[in-house]
Length: 359
Image (cartoon, rainbow, N blue to C red):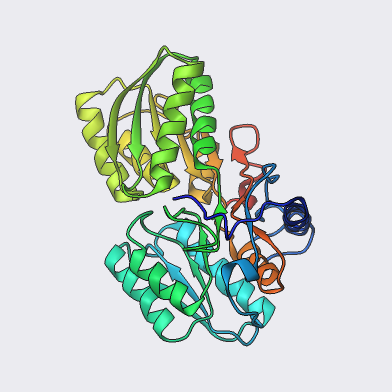
């Protein structure tokens, strides 16, 4: 969906303020102060540069009301059960930053990977009078009932880590997260390097129905076709972003394609499941090149142990940036429609020394 002209004003002054916002975030996030939830200077989110002419949103444009976050009722909706290290770190970062800022009325829910439950959770929080919502969406579509209720109540929604297919500054306030297509491209570059630009590769797809899976897949495929056309993608199946499913799918893969050269897992949990399957099939470390995305301690340790070749980070420590964005918005200053964060990566050159930066 496209933003309406009435709401968006990408004037020079507005864009300049947004750029200042991004610069301030980057400096603060990259400083020496420890951000709660484990986001020290080594692990904190850092904002990438804003795109010239990027859209922004203000409190007046959104139609909201200025509030004091310390006394406001704030809701956070988590999408998946917190067995995944990414979700554990994400939720803890929100809770810790709220405590750091003195926010005393924070409600958190977990949809346990059930989309209907997440919609119900968010609607119930809106009915209970929350004044700000931070949402980690399970799916990118299907949020119309939530938007209708939030718009009627003028409650801004900050979406993190997965994007919703809707209009910023209308249906929701802003999106904070990674460039998922770029993550896929970087994973492809690492796979091409590991395979010497030739061989066969399997993709363990993430859960369907969200833009993370779609963009990590297209980014990887596009880059492989560009830089290493002799690498052939011969297998694709969803592992649901789950370690158990990643192991199961890899076991199936090895039964039909035992000579596979590389596995691209669209998150670390599936990659770690794949490693279990590779070991079970009698493979040795390095026989099959594995590249994944996230940056968990388990996966980075997998690099140290020789089972994983590279990990592209997807930083889950959203608390400081999410609340700073909300504070800027409620102060009447513009915030970007998309706040894109930088992601580091791990390989054999830095995995052992930088293991403490993983989550």
